[in-house]
Amino acid sequence: MPTNILMPALSPTMEEGTLTKWLVKEGDDVRSGDVIAEIETDKATMEVEAVDEGKLAKIVVHEGTENVKVNAVIAIIAEEGEDASAVKAPAPETKKALSPQPSSQKGEGEVVVASKPESPLPAGERKGPAAEGGGKVRGAAPTDTARIFASPLARRIAADKGVDLAAVQGTGPHGRIVKADVEKAKPGAPAPRPAAQGAAPAAGPAIDPRAFYEKDSYEEIPLDGMRKTIARRLTQAMQEIPHFYLTIDCELDELLRIRKELNAKTGADEKNAVKLSVNDFIVRAAALALVKVPNANVSFAGTSLLKHKHADVGIAVALDGGLITPIIRHAETKGLAEISTEAKSLAERARTKKLKPQEFEGGSFSISNLGMFGIKSFTAVINPPQAAILAVGRGEERPVVKNGKLEIATVMTVTMSCDHRAIDGALGATFLEAFKAFVEYPPSMLL
Image 1: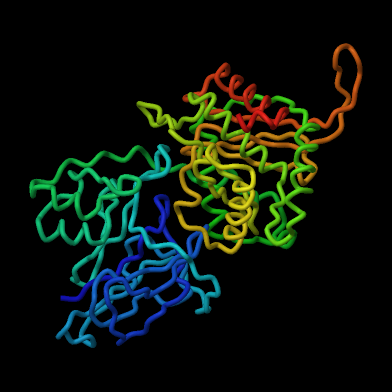
Image 2: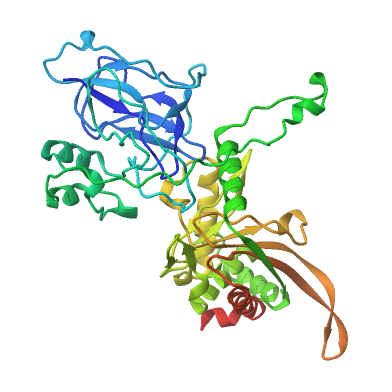
């Protein structure tokens, strides 16, 4: 019986993607684990692995096709002894197709069929298109409103044993169901699935701006996948997360002095030189402040708070047409040089769309720094599932009063956006007080 190859979910929030390149052609023999295609999401280019072996009988979705829905059939594998020419392909469910283009960006990550949603925000119904053509489905998500996240092997074993995956508790990364979970489960009747929490809010404006302008007075530029995702998720964030803002000024003179000395010493060995930035100090200070004020290192989860054991700090990186927030995991355990090296590596791979999903999803806190653009202060939108983000402005010389005397100091304004469901005003202020202390006296970061 033929096996359908489905469009995989390469991240917890992925709903569609672009099939950029096939690495095999019809008639080729494939084995389980072979890399057969490249998929581009709004944030990364990833590889697709075959989950069964046989002969690639039909390619349903061709190279360059965008907006391919998760769980849509993209190809069909014929098993040994089957007539590949007799396999019928279902019509691809896509929005539009582009001209085939070779892709120069090859992802480094392993395909993850799915994992737990990264946000507690209602995501609406996440239905995958039903597989057509009468073939077996490997790794298909249920067609009701609850997505189940499991490895392809776990799904195959579950189907053979008659185990309902909705009743299985996953022990894999992000709660993903793995082989061991299914082997321990007992066959039984399907468990009730949770009802959808409501449809995601539309990203489009309530009033169409085209009505106010002459047709030839503007150029209409369609949104790409990244911009659509940003529009949808940040609209959700502002509508559903009760933001409030706290602002504080930090003096940077001591930090700048120490940074200059450290860079001068590490620069003596140019081969292994690490050039520290002010942002590296900010990341370190934020991580240590989260450790000192652990109640601020949380995520809102509806009926509970998730209190994180580590400071996983995201750093906003500007890309062409959007932004992404790669995460420095366990930042509280890393020194300035390690943070600097990792931040530069993450930013470079972010700009070439080579980040793995686990490198930009989740996190417990974020930093958005626009100081290099001359911005004095601003507020940032919280990136769910996090409960806070720090907006960092430019360090500049300002008059300050010290001991009754007017002096000049280099001052940086930072504004913390807080989720009031998880962080109250006093708690946010306590965090900023700790952050300010680390920034203004960097040697305290060594204690």
